[in-house]
Amino acid sequence: LVTQSATELKVESRFPRVEATQIVVFKFDGSEVTTSVSEGVVEKSKASWEGDKVVITARRVVSTQFGDFVSETKETWTRNGNLLSIQKTLTADGVNDSQTAVFERQS
Image 1 (tube, rainbow, N blue to C red):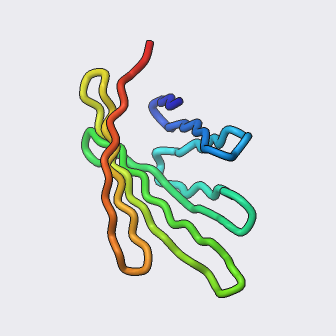
Image 2: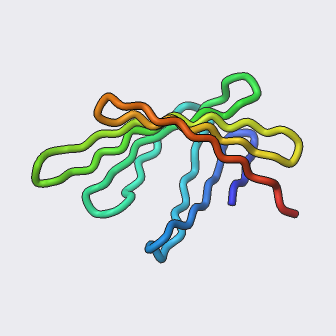
């Protein structure tokens, strides 16, 4: 579930094998949000407007006994009528992977 006001974007997500709903509130002032994803996993992210698109950037650190594993993502959200397209690029260990998902607004 995604809700938006003039100053913030609220994203509620559910993931497989996770009972609680994850809620992240992004402020459009560029401030960073820190989320504890799970034990040993911390993500810092922020959202901003780029023209008529919302861009969310994130840096996730997974701490293990072998050291920290760092990944970075960039999501570009574009709305066209009742459709929301999210293009996501993940960078980890010098490798980039991009995917696009399209969602239809439900009444």
